[in-house]
Length: 220
Length: 276
Image (cartoon, rainbow over all chains, first blue to last red; front, side, top):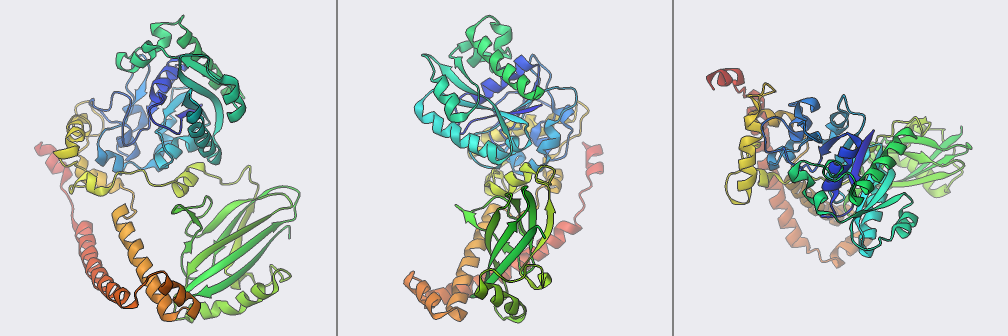
């Protein structure tokens, strides 16, 4: 199943969640931030998402195996300009993975819409503030417009009791509060998802809850 | 016929304004594809400059609810000198005047639009990725940011970081056995063949000026008055359009010669790779 991790706004922790949820699902995570790569790997040798979208490499060639397998994005503006988003559907259907998590950029442009368009479902990420809900609603509208179901909502980096029920009512999907935990924040740089770093932590349980919501969608 | 189509056209200032009504008398929703038959491409309705979902340069594809109707409207530039638009006038007046009871299938080929496909919406050709591409704004960085080489970011300035990444990214990929990437020549082959945003913007601007001039020349008195009230100075506009004409002619020459050179050039990639 292809899952897009989306959210109307930048800086809410989409990439970190995408990486950790992919860890929990034993999935591949694709960095679809075409103009501003967010996951590591794009500076290393070898082809990346830009090359795949430009038809110069196969998706499997671009995958960097690791604790969580990553298909990184290139970091050049030239690569971003030449990437043909129409190839995204074939690109994310990488053989050998039951689930692929596509980390989508913020905003309402093609690079934000295309992952939603090719995904079977999406996870919306929002920070647990009242005003962030409006961004999440905008992202849900975009997902709905592009026929992408909403698997779950993550209220990220919560400290106090998050307004889970209110968000569930507003967005119409199971909602999970992800506790603020610096091990999640470090997970990408350390290449260690929270499920490995602290499997008993509340944050790891919350990530597992999101992964379970994705699995339920896949069964449905 | 469970799906019926009514259409009407009004031509103003060389632009046909087409109204379409698709009715579904079936108890299930149907996906319909409606194509423009006027000579000229479709100018779909836009919101904040972005075409509404479902529209393409040929027409519209969308779903009509069970026992429902779909009301659409678009513009289409038909050349002002009238040869083609005259042909369209007779069928156009009838539906316009009689608001409904005209036979939908009687003279379909003469209608401004044609219903080309009716299908089940669940199995239809709905493609969200095409919808995203058609409906959302372009995400690509402007060509100026990429540098004159086309695939090679300009080293220095804001591009310094990207350029160092470029060295280890695409350039370094040959040793591991995958497709070697020399960015400049190969990338241009797979570049989407749409005009760069800067060029498209310029053409849109010029289009707007010429349209205003055409309205002043051949539009109705009320349209011309509206343009004048909108602050369009006829003399200034005439000069600007004359400049546009000269600039466009120069651009056309240059584009043609560049296209010819681009077609003719053949980079000896194999030889260069052996040399490297």
